[in-house]
Length: 58
Ligand SMILES: [Zn+2]
Image (cartoon, rainbow, N blue to C red; front, side, top):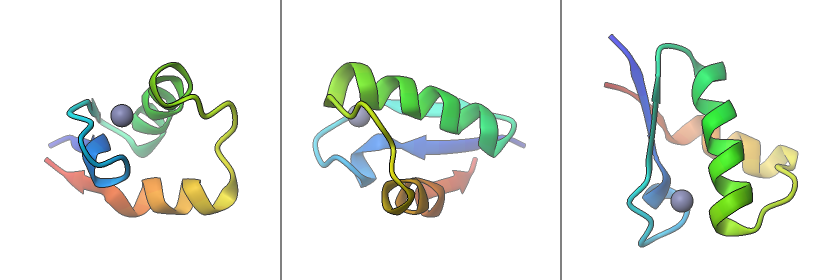
């Protein structure tokens, strides 16, 4: 059983999904994607909390 983060829950219209076995794996992918595609150079605590809340078990 893995976990999935659908970026569209945070950035409406984005269809990217980050998948992994652990929250850490997903956060790593999400941080990279957010930097490359959404221009977020840093993930602040508020954003991190939103990202974590959007991670689902898949
Ligand atoms: Zn995205």
